[in-house]
Length: 226
Image (cartoon, rainbow, N blue to C red; front, side):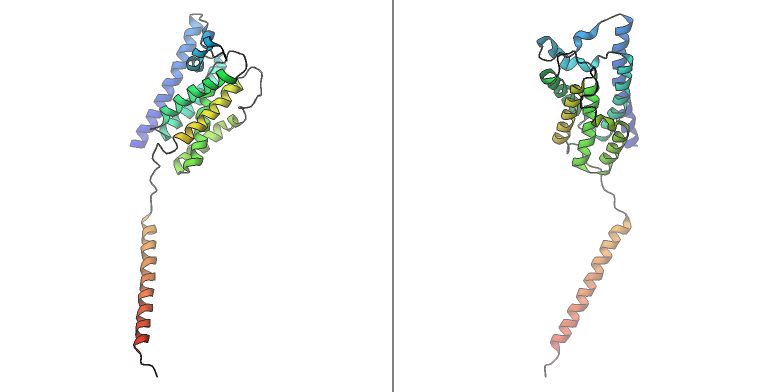
C-alpha cells in the first residue's frame, strides 16, 4: 500500500509541475506576452533573474512538449525512488545549472527546463552507481533506456540549442548524487527461509564434526602408551 501511494504521489507531483509550465506558456500565447526578459543572459546583471525564471520559459510548443515528457517521467522516478532528497536535488540542479550558464555560457538568451531534465537524469544515473541497490539500479535502467541520449546532448550539437544548460545541469545532478547518495534508506534485502536454514545447517554440521573430532582425540589421548 505504501509503495502504491508513493507512486501515485510521484505521478501527481510531476503532472502538477508540467501543468504549471503549460499554464505559463498558454498565458504567454493567449495574452500575447513576451517573457523573454525571464531568460538567462550570461554575465548580464539583469540576466541574473534567469537563474530562477529561465526554466519556466520555453521558446515553442515543441520545446515545451519535449521537456514536459522528460519532467513527467524523470520527475516521477525521482520522487518515487528518493522521497527524502528529491527537493534538495531539484533545488541544487535548478540553481547550480543556472549559475553555471550565467558564468560560462555563450552570449545569448538561455531559456527552457532542459538543464533541469539533464540534471535529473544524471542524478538518477550517478546515484545508482554509488548506492548499487536494486531499486536505484532499476530506476537508472529505465531512465537510461528512455533518455540515454542525454549523455551526448551535453556537448555542442546544434547552434540554437543551449548545450551549456545541459552540461551544467548534468554537473549539478552528479554533484547532488555525491552529496545525498545516502539520504534515502536503501530497501531491505529479504532473505528466504531456506537461506537461513542452510546457514544454520552448515554451522551445525561443522559443529558436530568438530565435536566428533574432539571426542576421537580425547579417546586417543586416554589410551595407554606402550
